[in-house]
Image 1 (cartoon, one colour):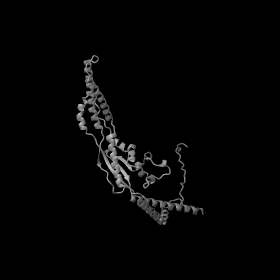
Image 2 (tube, rainbow, N blue to C red; image 1 turned 90 degrees about the vertical axis):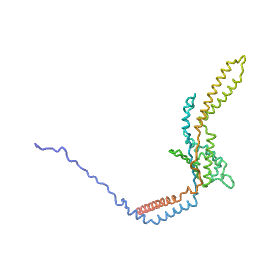
Image 3 (tube, helix red, strand yellow; image 1 turned 60 degrees about the vertical axis):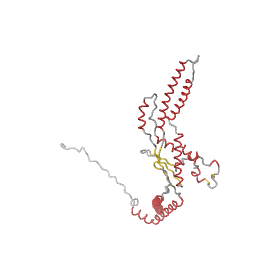
Image 4 (cartoon, rainbow, N blue to C red; image 1 turned 135 degrees about the vertical axis):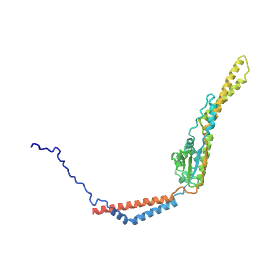
Length: 331
């Protein structure tokens, strides 16, 4: 018909999709869960009490009492003001040596304290193997309780197992550069004594074995200076002859004097540079004989045991109830 308008937008057909509903049996009934827990309350309390009493007994009579002693090292820094006063004078000398060396001194100390070199010294010098492997050491007979001689522990065995890391610890505060070393042992006196021994080994290493670039350079210049001194003495003792004229003697003597004088200057510079690279430390917090035990933390052990035992007992009750329901359904 004229004037009749067609509906260009037909209504959309909606399809109803039923939403699946949970069965009543599948719904979680909190009240039912509480009833299950309430029925097993005596088991929960009894199981938790037994486990806690066992933890108390173990912490009191089985776990060994361990003590921890600490010591703090402070690396010393050289006075840069004195070096700055000498920089003008040293800069005018030929072939000046760089005085800005030195590196991170605290890092060098930490590296030695964590090194196998120190651990080897401590084990050998203070006979630590019987303490490390005390379970297979007969203190009365002073021998290892092993079936074969090859099974006896050695220093290499202790190093490969990193067993010393469990009682000898080294930590550095990056902000203050302070180094804290700790020793853990069942004997508090021994723990403090070993820290003092560590300081002795560190002192000996820095004084006698630690070698810097400046030290090697000073030793090289010193060797060259001795050779130059012999050369200068040789020409000073020469007399003119037909083969050796006075002019040649004077010329060689002047060259030897010049070389000797320059090497003397370089030797003084090397000594200054070497002194700047020397590593030293002081002990602001010395070792002590601890009186308070470090381990075991009995209260923490008992509290954690009580919590874990409580949750475990609840899980056991739910599991037993679940098995019981399955058996009822099968019937």
